[in-house]
Length: 101
Image (tube, rainbow, N blue to C red; front, side, top):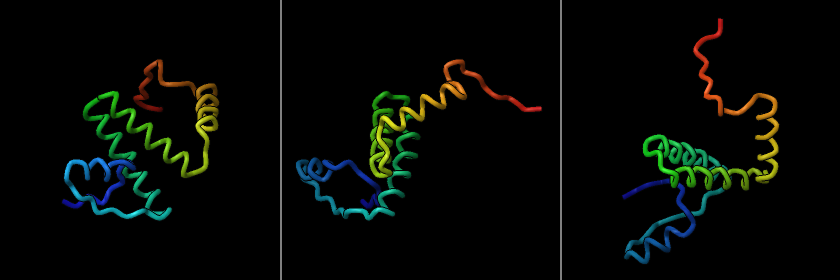
């Protein structure tokens, strides 16, 4: 079966233990970024469908990989998040925009 998608680092080893042989390659920077973005969409869709906390952990793992690839620290992005929360608020009040007139 063909997949052509980014997988976690230990998956080939885990598959081998199950008697399966994985054909893989190491992505260059352009492919890696493209696959990370696709993986973010995939994992977000899985959470949207299943609503399992484990899927949120997968989303977070992809976000951490994207931050690392872009050279952005978790602290930097947390500072950005806090600044935006102060300037624009969060989502805790559950406000839904229906229309702007």
